[in-house]
Amino acid sequence: MKPTTTMATLVALAGLVLADAASAQIAVSANDNKVKLNNGKVDVVKSPPADTITVIDLGANPPKVLSEIDVPNSVVGPPLNVAITPKQEIALVSSNMKIDPANPDKTIPDDKVTVVDLTNLHASLTSRLKNAVGLGKGAPAPAATVLATLQAGKGAAGIAMNRAGTLALVANRAEGTVSVFTINGKTVTAGDKVKVGSETSGPSGVVINNEGTMALVTLDAEHKIVVLSIEGTTVKLTDRVISAGLRPYAIDIAKTGDVAIVGNIGTGGGDADTISVIDLKATPPRVANTITVGQTPEGLKISPDGKFVAVTVMNGTNKAAASPFFNAAGKLQVYARNGTQLTKSGELNIGRWCQGIAWKGDNRTMLVQCMAEEEISVVRFSGGTGNSLAKVGSIKTKGGPAGIRTAEP
Image 1 (cartoon, rainbow, N blue to C red):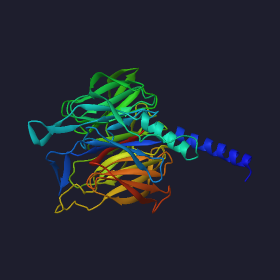
Image 2: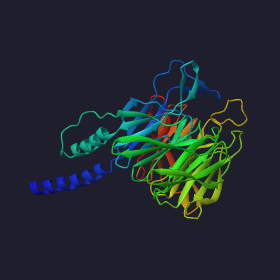
Image 3: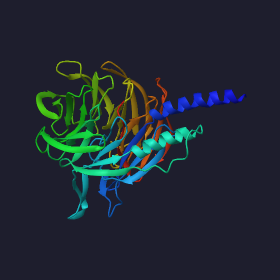
Image 4: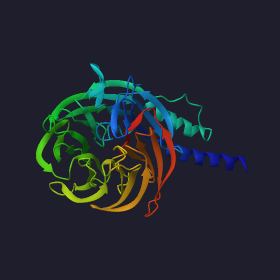
């Protein structure tokens, strides 16, 4: 090959690499070390190691761990207790429960929200991609760092962030409120709390619409979803209440902005539970469709393109082996979405006590958390029907993976 051709090839390849670097994708898994599932009973670990987060490079094939640091968090609450700013500068991680200092055999509500700096990790991904074509020198080993620990409310659970990355809401399960945080670059400031229900109403999941003008909050103990209005940093409870199913819990919104999907986890009595589609274009927003998925749809996530919905169904794996509702494997299900209609595209046996899901930007690769195995499965989705899901790898975590997120598309 002539020198000029070689240079042209390198320049072209460099352009592709730099384009990839600009979209380098990070996932953050929050891992709980405090509790273990023992034959259907959740036991508190004696003198447990610290909870952790695992930062994962989704651009690698297979996805790989970039950094692991100590950050408090909890399996209690929907597995969407992580949020990442659009430029992947920081992550917010909430902590619902902590060890009771007065009785180490029990847990009590926590209120922490940890701000984690991801900028060095994102920069290192860019540097490594440059190195692949000889464009840069080797970067130091990446590391996430804790920037601040803030206070939300008792039982801090699900987190939502607006598309601009300037506002975050945290649902506080143990006091019936939602905490408001403002974000300016890497500085996060706690603001007001909004009362959304009684102390026992169980605010769990929260999402903000694409325009940043409205939020939906699931109150699982009261079997309803309340609507908040947002104007700048002012958040208020409206009188609109949406009824989806028994114990609405995890909730997500499509990039297209037309629907939200909520998992209704039921009473845990062995019955088949549901997920519901909320039509956000309707005035006022309302449930337009509900389908049955199986025992306890714990986690759910809509694909980046908005065309598919992935659901982790606990399927009785959290019950005692002698229970008539026990099963040895949970289920990962994927549904194709056409407006408010859902059609099953695939199902895969997964582990036990499984939690959250994160999609790669290609809409074909997922990370699926399973607490009992302390493992994140890498799952490939073909996009078709029938046998469209396959486990292609795994990542071991330091603690049970309990919540996961990428930057929202």
